[in-house]
Length: 273
Image (cartoon, rainbow, N blue to C red; front, side, top):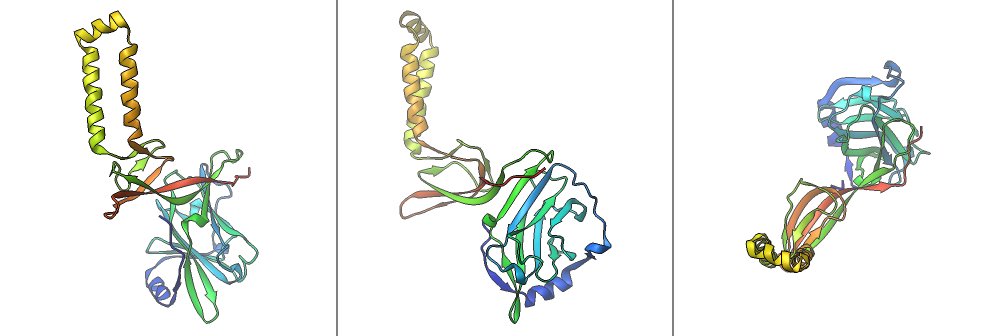
């Protein structure tokens, strides 16, 4: 689901963070990360277009499944990193490190397709206060790299909503494929057509049906079967893209079923060798 962009004063956040910070806190100069990034890897880009990079002091991010520091590569390099007990990793940057950058990049090595960013926000030092600005999901792009040599299109997460006058056939958190039925527009008509189809199939398989097909050919049955199947197909609202169902709600005023789907759309991004 899209993360709503908002600013939260960090007074309470910093107090909680101080009490929940894990034992891990190191500066980049104190640790050595392997030079190579084990493939496959997933590269996340966090856009800075809604904040002034000159005032960004940190990026907080939470991965699911959880990632270790040994799996991560950074651009730019943070000055210090902290793991908090709430599962977030805080990357602290030197003053004005992000001033001239369009985005910060994290590469997750030995990644799986299931790895995703579940929470991310910038820590911004504004005049007289420090705030946390949540990053919209649409502003977090990712790329998949397996060999390091092939350009692979990236994706961005968007939320889409489809409406249907009828009964939804999917449930929240269900993974769907393209062309999968989401909703039936008229369950009563569907039941009637399905019964007609079953009756016709039984007739075709009967002795009289086989005899008629032998004498007159199969085209009579085939035409009727195709016509019924076409009517049944028109009753379904099908998914125009793969994704995950986030929720189904019904509008009592107009009888519409609204289906919200989390979709990963292709973005114009490329992975360099």
